[in-house]
Image (cartoon, rainbow, N blue to C red):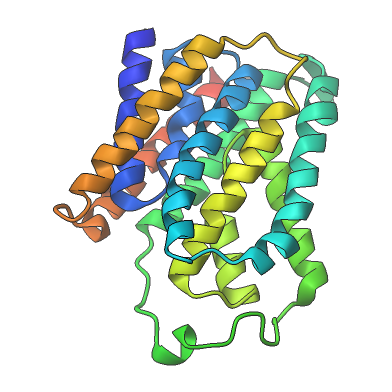
Length: 268
């Protein structure tokens, strides 16, 4: 099953390279259902894999100058501190089984149910057709009259930190809209900045687990290397395959995966 899992991560890397995001959301289900890891360990491995692969993507945007350091200071610091605290203190404190509203719940099931909800939200963001940006929506001054103000942006950073820390996913589907509509970045700069924020959060969150779990470093580096190879290959073929057509199709696939996880963990 390890071989099948590694092949799956190669495909995830290809998807990331082809459509620029979304594929990493399937990392945890692959680790749990194909490679046989418990959910809390799978989220730890996912943080490292997502962090390293996002960093590779962010470097390309950094070279083009399409990353906003101001946005990282305002958004990433809050999320980085939050994700570290969640992984270092909150996750180890959650017992393997506990009572919630009079019902006994396993930690594994709670993580996977919440993760399935995240997958469903992410799949909707990929399936939904977006209207083309208008000129007056693109040509605006960054950080000019933010509609909700810096305190709310910090709150969004904390929210993303909680999601990343608990679920082991990047939360790009939240970060990108926040950067565009609240900090007024253009789309390309929002993507690049989001990748760097995800990389920082994921790697910092992963360090919070060191000392709490036994980590198979050889397997982890191997999976990450395969995923990065997939990204490089996907980026090469991205000019030959329409991302606009591929993204909704992959969105429907992730929707099915999300429903499978939700049904399996809720009823079986």
